[in-house]
Every structure is written in C-alpha cells, then in structure tokens.
Image 1: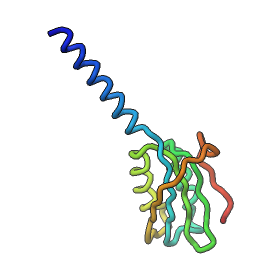
Image 2 (image 1 turned 180 degrees about the horizontal axis):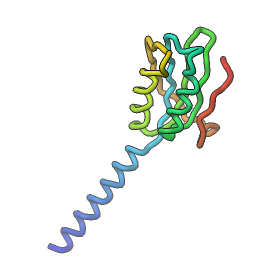
Image 3 (image 1 turned 120 degrees about the vertical axis):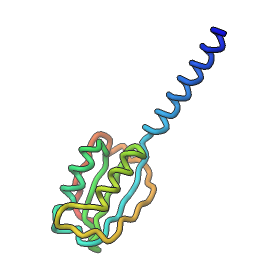
Image 4 (image 1 turned 120 degrees about the horizontal axis):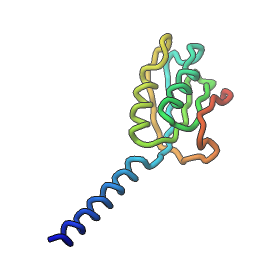
Length: 118
C-alpha cells in the first residue's frame, strides 16, 4: 500500500507542477484599441495597469487614432489586462479592442514602455 500511495503522490505532484507551468507560461498578444483613446492618458493608464499586473511590452499611438498594445504575460494576466483595456481611463471611450496572437519579443522582457507613435 505504501508504494502505491507514494507513486500516486509523485504523479499528483508532477501533474500539479505541469498545470502550474502551463498556467504560468508566457504568451504574447497584440491589442488594438479603438474609440476616444488618444489625448486622454490612455498610454499612461495602460503602462500603469501592465506594471501592476507584471506584464511586459509596449503601448503606442497609431496615426489612424487607435492605440496599439504589445503585451507578454500569462493567460490570466492577459484576461485581467484586456478587461482594463476595455474599460480605459476616466475620460476615454472604448469602442473596440481587437486581439491578435503575437511572437514574444525578448527586447521587452522585464519592462513595459511607452513607445513613440507609429
């Protein structure tokens, strides 16, 4: 009996480590936020939210009036981050948040910056 319990315990421990690894795996996404998002502090709001959630990447204004956000984090971090992007800062008005998968960029490991407009 003792060996069966030990064997199960090891398998359960391995499974828990696997799930922890999967849930903590970093993925990259690109968000395009439309609406009244320029001139209302959206980039600073986004940077503060990313730093609070420990997300890495960048935010920048686009010439077509949207804001682009590149973010690297765990799936749960992305879910919380997207909810904040959909809300935006006080004087913004968000009409849409488009989301795309992206390739992680090691240039942004450890920081979230405001980049010049594109």
